[in-house]
Structure formats: structure tokens, C-alpha cells
Length: 144
Image 1 (tube, rainbow, N blue to C red):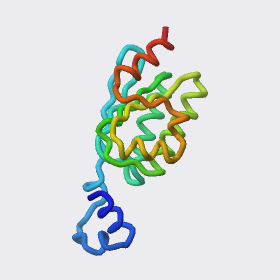
Image 2 (image 1 turned 30 degrees about the vertical axis):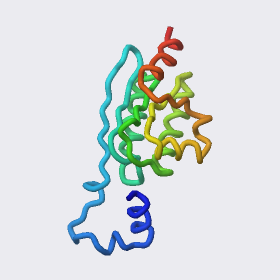
Image 3 (image 1 turned 180 degrees about the horizontal axis):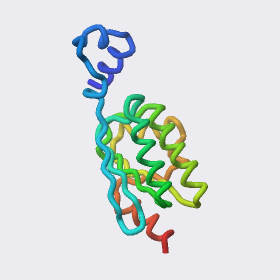
Image 4 (image 1 turned 90 degrees about the vertical axis):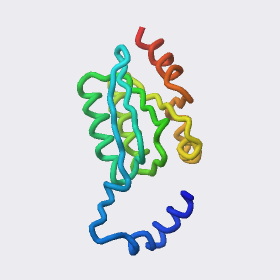
């Protein structure tokens, strides 16, 4: 049914059939949870990373990098959707962390999200793993 939602959004149907008090942040929410695993920061994302939520995601990521988070694991296993602004936030974070000789590693087992990385060629830029343990092993080996 995602294709139906996307088609309705593009046609304007969805906007014309929403209640007047509609708040796009309510429907398209992104939950962000940050935790530490050794010296690595793990950012757990749940929901949609899009034009409405990517700025908040970018802020969290950049704040962690400024606080000394050299290596980040972005766990996207509960992300349902990502658009170009979400990808832009990731690339911006990668630029900043690369200046500090760090890395961003993605955890993603959602086919619809993985497909976006493949279509854009970003699977060649970001290491992408199907589970968090493998991502942490990659970074853990570099931290030593």
C-alpha cells in the first residue's frame, strides 16, 4: 500500500483529504534513540526519515560528532521510509565524521530502504550490514 500513499501524496489527493488541524509531524514521526557501545555511538531510528524529520536527525548526528563521537552506527532496522533529505543528512554526517577520521556504518534489513541506497549508489559509500553485531564488529576492529 506504500505505492498508494506515495501516489496520493504526489497527486495532491492526500493533502486535500486531510483534516484542517492536520500536522505532518504527527503522521510522519521519527523516533531517535542514542546509546553507547564502548566508544561507538549507536543511533536507533524508528519511523520515517524524510523532509519533515531529517533536520532533527542531522542535529543529533552532528551533536554526537562534535562531542567526540568518531564512529557512528546508524541502526535503520525500524525505518520504514527514507527520502533524499534523509540521505542528505547521512552524507552531511559522513563528511563531518570523515574530517575526524571516523566512519558511519548503517544497519538496515528493510528491503524498501536498502533499495534506496542501491538506486542512489550510496551502498558503495556507506558500509551496510543486516545486523548491528556485524556493524559493531567492523567499527570495533578499527577502534583497537
